[in-house]
Image (tube, helix red, strand yellow):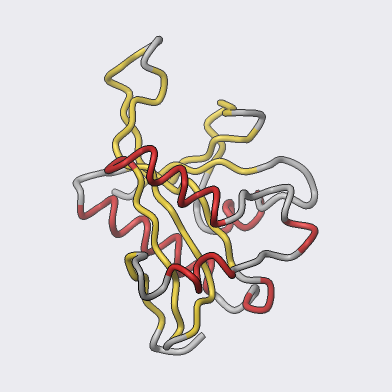
Length: 156
């Protein structure tokens, strides 16, 4: 990973690079493709924060945040959360620090918006990214969402 890593808003100039990103084949069951994420971002509007992760001019990943959504409006509409909705690091760029960079960029954005906790979910099991998220300071909340483990990282 070089010093030229950054997140960039997705637009006409980089959408093809975003759509071309692919994770490792064995990870495809754990994370939706970028095209689905962009469709969800369109449907959710300002709640979604999709970004392309670039190293210089090369697309190396994609991240999308959910911002200030009611976690369970049937139970407690005041329980509003922000966090990582999607993280796709390109197959040839994994293990180089890009995932960590993306999570830190997401945490910084939530902090900038006044948040003090950062949530994510992950597929359980040996091929899921649980250990990656635990190493970054996430702890399971005891909740699940769509069969995935819910984790939180305090930003304080």
